[in-house]
Each structure stands twice: as C-alpha cells, then as structure tokens.
Length: 163
Image 1 (cartoon, rainbow, N blue to C red):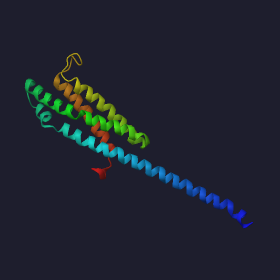
Image 2 (image 1 turned 60 degrees about the vertical axis):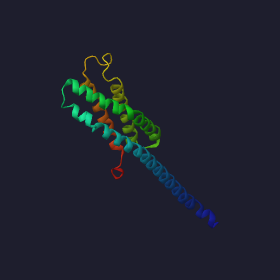
Image 3 (image 1 turned 120 degrees about the horizontal axis):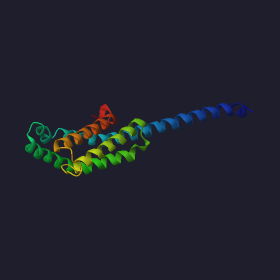
Image 4 (image 1 turned 180 degrees about the vertical axis):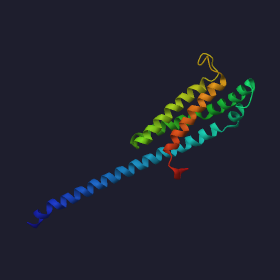
C-alpha cells in the first residue's frame, strides 16, 4: 500500500533526474564537438595569419608593376604549398560541425565557402581567361580579402582561452 502511494512521486523524480542527466550529456557532447572544431580552426587561423603576413605580400604593395608581380607570384606559390592542408582542416571542421552549435556551424560553412573563393583566385592567378579585366595585384587583393574573411570566421569559432 505504501508503495503505491509513493510510486508516482518516485517515478516523477526519477524521470526528472533522467531528463536532466540526458540534457547535461547532450550539452557536454556539444561542447566537446565545439572544441574539436575550434582546435582545427586555430590551426587554420595560424596558417592564414602566416599567409596574410608573408613578407612578399607586404612588400608587393610598395613595388612597381613588374617587381610587384614577381613578389605576388612568390606569395601565391607559398600559399599553394599549404593550401591542401588548410582545405583538409576546413573539410574536417565541416564534417565535425554537424553536432556543434549553430554559430559554429554557420561560421564553419562561411569559412569553407570563402576559402574556396580564395583558392579559385589563387589557383587561377595570372590567367587572363579567368579574369581578363583585372591585374595581378587586383587578383591577389581579392584572394587576400577572402582569406581575411576566412580568418575572421575561424576567429569567431576559437574560444579566447585557446589563443
């Protein structure tokens, strides 16, 4: 008899405990996924920072047309060498971000999209049939702008304590 009187409240309490435990497990899993994406984002951020601060790119802004093209070609060659690594990291971020928060998912998708635009510009750099009305410097500036957008997107993913 006493068991019947206490059964309903005990089951209610156990149900609430189960619900809270499940929610906490989901929250911890989501936090873990956010951190996995953030670690990769931090590596991408380091590479992009290096690309955007490359001496050839900085010096190219002060040179005349012929010398500028030579320096920009040096920068493009440097970027192409590390491009596959960054693309792989961004693809891993996209794969992992499915269980992450909406902000992380959005920023990951935006970073990947901007990287693809920058990659197209870098891989077609100097080809007249690709962008006939733009100079080498304009193509490099456009690629640099897309890379800066990627860097900004991954910077939003990386928590401040991972910096």
